[in-house]
Amino acid sequence: MDLHLKNKVVVISGAAGKEGSIGETILQRLVEEGAIPAVIDRNERGGEYVEEITKNGIDAIFCQTDVMRPDEIKKALDTIAQKYGRIDVVLNNVGVNDGVGLDATYDEFMDSLKLNLVSYFLVVKHALPLLKKSKGNILNIGSKVALTGQGNTSGYAAAKGGVLGLTREWAVDLVKYGIRSNAIIIAESWTPSYETWINSLENGEEKLKSIVDKIPLDNRMTTTQEIANTCLFTISDRSSHTTGQFIFVDGGYVHLDRALLTK
Image 1 (tube, helix red, strand yellow):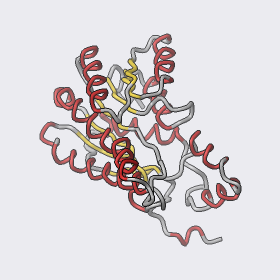
Image 2: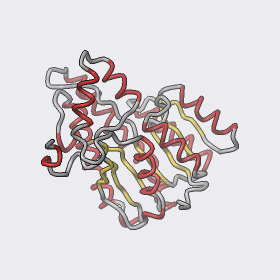
Image 3: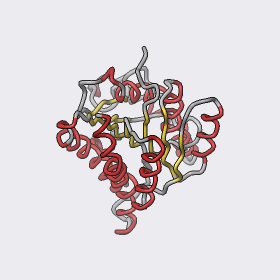
Image 4: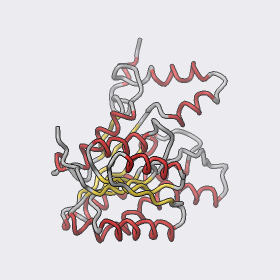
């Protein structure tokens, strides 16, 4: 299916993760669809990705940005606006489950909010004038932690809850401009970061099996490719009458009856 994303300028934050991460997978799918990715990330790996993309004849830009610094976010969006004169999509993908719990300091808690929530607000704020012109759309990457909790991650849980709140607020606030706002909610997905976490545990294999066994559909983790495919459909005009929605790509992890898990 042609998603009509060719030459659409897609601002994507957090796309410079390791190969196989959610952001990097979304980035590569955007390239496959002929979109113009505008990558915002603090990791210089983003420059390497964009260099490779442009070598293959696809237009792209990398703005090395610490999204915890408001001035750097504004500078990045100004740079993108100056180069392209348009923004069709904002895809907020930054997220670190940083383990900032109740034992954390005030500064640690606030830093978690700045990274995982405030950056979403600022990217959209500075992209908004061009989103209004293009009647573009916003897609926020959320987490099941906002709805289920997890334990020892107050900062991340609060931030991701805020992301869902902003998603609905923006859908209401921007409907008069024809701008859609949605969120993708992820539960358990096998990424380089997830693998690192599992490998750090003494009982890693046992823990992994206990998690996978709780995913109703196929008893397997969601792939980053599945997440990316849903993201691209949602930002495309194939999903033109969808707004204010929380779209779960989780194999039924959050909502389905726990009786399914009885063996």
